[in-house]
Image 1 (cartoon, one colour):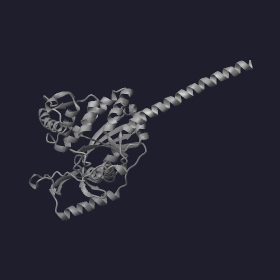
Image 2 (tube, helix red, strand yellow):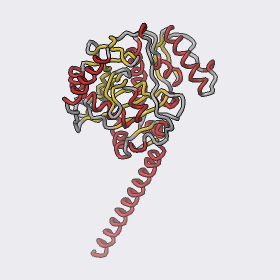
Image 3 (cartoon, rainbow, N blue to C red):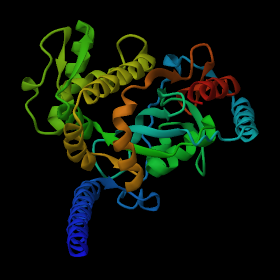
Image 4 (cartoon, rainbow, N blue to C red):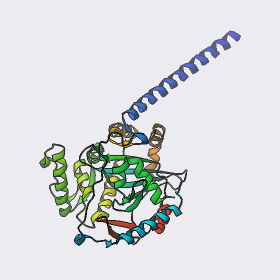
Length: 357
């Protein structure tokens, strides 16, 4: 009887050992695969963010005084405003909450890789796990902010001077929210990302088609592609390719200028989100494998895979979209030969905190 029990115990121990061995092998295999995905991504440590750029410059959209829409300030008035904004910035603390994870999505406008580029699209994606809410807040590029170490500039100049790390520091200090990480793409990368989800459904007017086709021609010439194969034939609602969708998101001179452009950008991003929501987990992993090398980011590996593991639940979250400056909470000024937006920072920060937290 004892021999039988001993034999039985040995069999059980053997089976348990095999199962544990297989689990270890599976765990190592999964880690090896996911780690290889991550290693292929364009992770950039903050201290290395500017090391590959040979130029540090800003592209400035100068506006002739006759075409300016903002209030022209004297040098004294500008100094007074700058001082007031610096005071306001020092008066509030940066909001931080363990239930909220903020990632700044950055769209970079540049024609070559010699410089970091101006950030023409900035969307604060905020995940609030407690509220089960995703907030998608566009930060308008012409907003007049204090860039640490640089001074008062348009918000989009922060990226040109210090890439992602300086931009998230600028957003954190001016908007008073802790920005945890950033992820940036240029036009070419965004085109490939949209194509990777199979394009997106959009509705374009005839005037939007006309302007978008101009951008398509420009981008095709830069990429040595045939514009005729990518042009939008006519207005309407349909599935648009990456090239066409990025051109739509760049439209600035149809409708309400840059205010409506940020709305188009949120629309494109929302449609990508909808496509991802309908993917199976294996398809989602395939998508991540394809697009990670296209995105410059500072998200550590453990955070990346934690987010990916939780992503199915994110698709059930409520989606909130907005932009800053908020309506009726800003003024336009004309300084440094540019029209710039000056939010009512106290009211703006209060409203942003209420939305995110």
